[in-house]
Picture 1 (cartoon, rainbow, N blue to C red):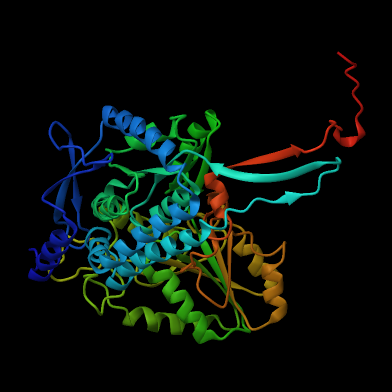
Picture 2: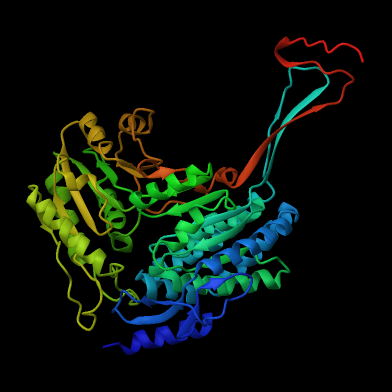
Length: 520
């Protein structure tokens, strides 16, 4: 049964964002008509209800989009970068005006709690302002030439049409990490969202395309909802797309990487995370409990930065478990649109099944289920995808501990000394986010050293989750390649030119080479 609260929320959000019972999933400067297109259903993980049907692209639509994108790129790259930044700022302001509605759309379709849904949209707004600043800082270096009367410097030029493939768990913000930075760099963007969260992408595109039009900008952002892997296959094999940014599983990312690499294209891959936290005996334990609880429970464990392993010193292990169980027992599970709910649903029945299977696998390998690990039956939401987050006592030899299960499972492992803790921490194939809770400066220094954490993100006395946009985001090992959002990640979206300028009357060669061509 659909609750009145759910229906009211859906009705108000759809009305404000222009979402209908049936929606086109193809935007190429305009919305492609629905006729003669296959459709998919967008279902809410809250209660299993169909939110809307969405038309999906065929190959003809894709080719039309790419022809259009090439023309748009040639126009967009001629606009000065600071002006491009102003246009992206206007897009951010338009998103700001629709923040609550877009956040609620994320809640309805992805199952995020209200604060996380709105927080994701706030992140898009922040990225737009960050990108605007970057538009005036696309710096190249000037270097000293070894040749007299010569200048040596580098400059950065737009790359082309960028393909962005996003996952369901961040159905809006991860697109903006790529799209807004790429845009100020002079690129246009083709977006293929997850079919599990395509309605959010459509809502975002309604807001963004209108803002671009109002700013007098070319329609630099296109949208392509596809069935299954069709869109990803087209994008990964297309030489007209010099860069593909993909967020998703390691297996899919590895497959996509091979296809893009075969045509010598570039990739940014944000793949699996299996993030560990070392909890030292010298830590502020209450602080550690807060950080780990947020990291393991946020987005119902469906973040690539979710805390999945707590590596705890044996002297504080029992106290740690006692306090952590107390926190877990007070966390409310249920409808994410309710203000008091902390843990919403998993995205679908497959995710729920994967959670239960992982718990059983851990049990079969000798793990002890300390808390949770079952389905959660929420009155009135029986068709939703709810589980009780699990705490499992484990050891580093268990195979399941080295896998990423995209669900709220926290494996807790004892350690005796710091070197053992660090070895356990680095023993998994993934390398995204890491953390240590300690008040010992030597342990902190060791964790930050070249032979410390092997991850792309390192946190001291804070959670593995909740990365800021100002820092470059990305990981090592099987987590992927490249960086997104902050620092100098803009360089991934541009091509570098090293320029030599001779303002003299001769052509001296470098390294003292002498070449006498003789006289004519």
